[in-house]
Image 1: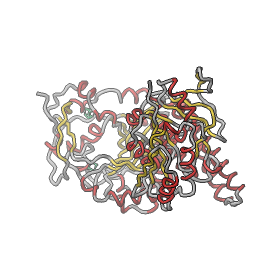
Image 2: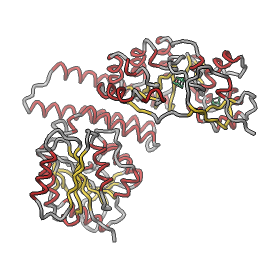
Image 3: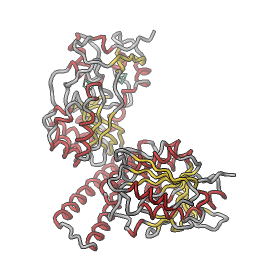
Amino acid sequence: MRKTDISVVIPVYNGADTISDALDSVLCQTAVKAVREVIVINDASEEDTTQIIKKWDEANPRKEFRLILHEFKTNRGVSAARNKGIELSSQNLVAFLDADDKWMPDKLKIQLNILRKYPEIKALGTGWDKLNLKPGKQVKNSLGYDLRVMDIKTELLYFWPSAQSMIIDREELLKLGGFDESMRYAEDGDLLCRLAEKCRIYYVCNELVSLGHGKNPFGEKGLSANLKAMHKGFQKTVKGCLKRGRINAVEYVFFLLWEEIKYIRRLRISAGIKRSCNKAPSDTANGNAVLSLLKRFAKICLALLRFIKQRTFLKSIEFQIVDHCNLNCRGCSHFSNISEKRFIDARVLTKCFDKLNSHIGYVYSVALMGGEPLLHPDLIDIMQYCRDRFPLSEIRIVTNGLLLDKMPEEFYRACHKNRILIYISKYPPTINKLDKIKEILSLYQVRYFISSTVREFSVCLNPEGTSDMKYTFEHCGRKSCTIVRDDHIYVCPISAYIDKYNKRFGQNIPQPEGLNLYDCSTDELLEYLKNPVRTCSYCTSRCKYINWSCSGDPDKTDWYGKTDD
Ligand code: SF4
Ligand code: SF4
């Protein structure tokens, strides 16, 4: 028989007013005997939350569960707090509750009835008061409950049920790696989607969780007050599903549009609540916000129409906007350490964006690369042009980060406004600057990603040109780094920039002409990217790993891979 002992996990941040009620609601459960421990993670509250929890503990000496209090020294967000709770838990079922919500007395009893009867259920939520939602497929059951099951696409439509109502198998949570700690908002929707890929998510429709202290679901207080950040969190979740291949590109666009509509609705609800609270909203601010939302919505619709018309998709594309670099790594795959100083003309680049758009309906990821892209004097304009042309794509700037703490304020504002992801390659010289960089990017709410430390480079040239080009291409990790150099597209940076190598070292490695974006059909373009190019004979499938270093005196052998013998 299934063991149904429960660890309850409650993250709390500045919850002095509400945490006692949340704990009382656990203590008052009719099935409280199943609760073995309640783990409260204080996420570095500024208020006297710890004292309140300790007092509650002392005031309830007869409770049968252990109260475990863990305190973070710095505020790490709700995902990190819940993950710590999962880590500290010792029972096979984990139930989540938020510090400003409450459970109805029969909540655990009803869930345990179902979990005992149907041990195959690994994740079970409940309904909430005020949110009369009943998505998903009804499941017949001998207990007579209105039990429903959700698949991943229904999850993406409703993000339901929410974490505060869920009981989840601890094993499943550990397998998933818990909540995504980079998400401070909408993190439970992300967890549900990843969970739905592994097991089915059930919920019983009874309204067994009370939205804390009479708050409304959106915009009044608590984390949900940050509607924009929530919106971004939902968008990230939808993107994650596309990345993991759980939805296709058409579905991706559909779910993004759906989320956009829900966002507008949430804003309206929130504005209504604020008005009813007599907090006069600023007409101008609201007007601007609505206008910018409408503009964004129109752009998304146009992009969707374009995709439906063209039905072509590219996973990623790189635009090299600066040839040279301020770091000059030995064996750079873009040959930036031996390139002359050169910036792409922003007008030429914009035309390339347009041209690519005329071929490809949807590009998942657009990277602005170098060399070092932060050196480009027109970078802020380029970011804006890029976002205008690719409203649905992830746009990233790939940088070594060395200049990030010196960029002007407008740069960060433009990153935030245009939803640009700063992708930082963590080279040894970057490491010392990371704390400052993170601080600045967080201040301006710019999304960023930091790679693991780059200690090695893989190099792959075979100067003899004796490789089987088909075989090398098939086994090449760089062939997905499709790159645009001026107005030509290439399968990879090696083939696009090998002329730099030839020129510097007097070599004659063949360079493909690339495909002129202005002078090819879409079919030709897609076909071109699937096939090896002449340069592939000069690559080896056996890469060599060289220690990362700056190249004071580059040598042609820096790029040599291992020979095939
Ligand atoms: S930082 Fe990047 S672009 Fe610059 S030299 Fe190193 S690998 Fe090349
Ligand atoms: S030239 Fe061919 S084998 Fe070499 S990196 Fe490019 S795609 Fe890969």
